[in-house]
Image (cartoon, rainbow, N blue to C red; front, side):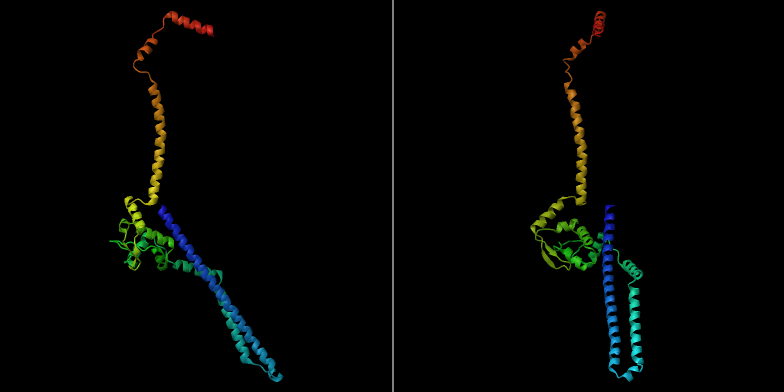
Length: 276
């Protein structure tokens, strides 16, 4: 149950990261479109100002003559700018942005589970991840995987942890053993500290993970506490048993419990009556 919840959280985190990245791309595209529109407006204004300057320089007679070509060019350029502005506004509208965002999110691949990703690495990096005889991996190989893989760093670390916790990998961590990178090239040797850490892990149960071991220790502590509380009443119960008289004193008690005579009973009743 905890693993499924963790996988759901990781998928949501990856989905959020992709959505934020896509939103940033849309914002950048919106800025580029705005810049293009402003440039087109400036070019339109400059094209309109040039005919006015030429008309001012021409003689009065020619200034009155119509210039259809210039007017047509200005009209066509203005229509082109207006159409481009309309297209840009249509592309940057909230509905279109929402549609583009939903399409990109739907097209985004779903991240695999750590176990499934490790299976992909067996095929993608056969010189580093082995199904049989295993070699120690390069120190910091998760950075190399992050550069080549498109998944989140958390998913990469979890898949890598599934591999390095295998008994055959822990057994391969011998002092002086050669480490390899993703391409199978030598990448250093296993030092004494890493070898000692691996030997300590070999002594632990194979199927017991760290969080399971901690849970077991907490459970053992919780079980031992009620046992301690139950032992105390046992000791108290033994104390009255120790205070019981020995078999030598038993005859004395038997003698004290003899039946009283009638006179003794009457005397006892008189003493009780006088006391009242």
